[in-house]
Image (cartoon, rainbow, N blue to C red):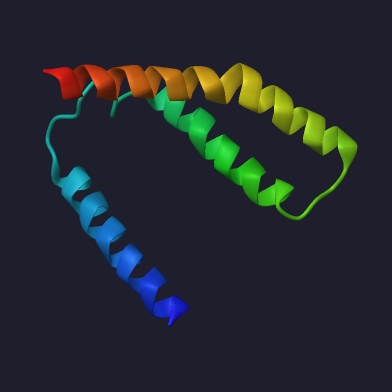
Length: 86
């Protein structure tokens, strides 16, 4: 049952990805490569953290969250909030 839910979610995401790839123009947010790199890095580190309990790795994750991710999330939120209010 769980794999079927994941397959459905994967299908929805794949459709969205294909739609985005077919676009000829992207918004400023979509072109924000630096922010995307930060988020992808965070995802990779999240996968590492889910299987490690070393203090140094935990401290590194804390720094990443405080100094890199939170500003990116704030920027994303502000951009989406602005779009929502239009």
